[in-house]
Image (cartoon, rainbow, N blue to C red):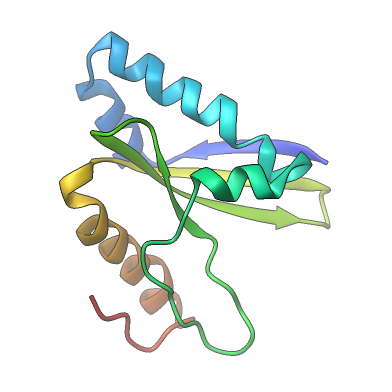
Length: 124
């Protein structure tokens, strides 16, 4: 199973505002931890987490996670398995300061799940 990495415009803008050292740390976190989703999910989930459970309709599960880069910054991303194309799709959504993780995570969850009809109401 291969990986397909995608990034949102917001992620790209966040990345542009970082200093070179910070950008390198973001790339290293992605390259170090995302491959573990396929080969060692325990290792992936020791780093990536969901700060709040998102209750979706039906038997769907949220694929929205926070991946810490360091004590100051984290990446908000989705990780989805696509068995039809035999790939794992990682969508890099935002880079956020630690103080804003929960707020931004919930904003992204509302945008993804409420507007798509997969959740009725995401509270924060």
